[in-house]
Image 1 (cartoon, helix red, strand yellow):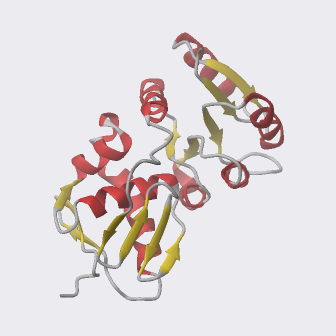
Image 2 (image 1 turned 90 degrees about the vertical axis):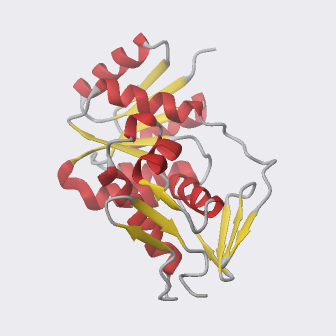
Image 3 (image 1 turned 120 degrees about the horizontal axis):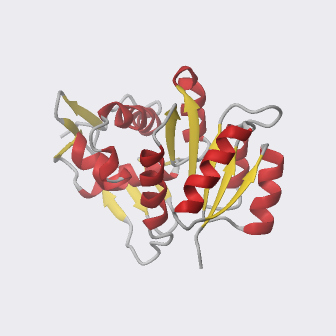
Length: 229
């Protein structure tokens, strides 16, 4: 059975182009002109992946992400323009897994779609990772930092899990991007900076501890005790 992709955008030209491109790759595609219609299709049709614009009349793409995340872990890929940096971050915080900046390459978008659909939806057999101040419960998709529960988006969770499994090691930009987003992202360190910046703030909270250390021009090192001995 073909994998189902729901495209949400108030621009008819965008939905037409994406429907054509996705259908050519043998995906089952439906489109919605606004988030309210998208929520109805989501409940009725159960898509395997959602592609949504951020700025739409009425309910926004960010609000759509929040609504979907209360019901499902389906991958959500948002479309944004370069001037929407704040909205992009809000969407990631609301549960979006990925973003593509307009104007975008259809080939890049298709690569991201394939990467998200390849990901196994369940990892319930994995044991929790306990290291330093952290407990990363993979089955429950929950994180505790020094006894404090921290809410992470799906991609932030994947990134932290990779860090936790390689605590103290330097992970290069390429290694992080390839492991979490796929090989098509390996040349985009600026893409990684958005996620690491958000993750760093959430993990630090009010503690003042720096759990993620930047290794200039190379990558990042995860310090599960916040750099303390």
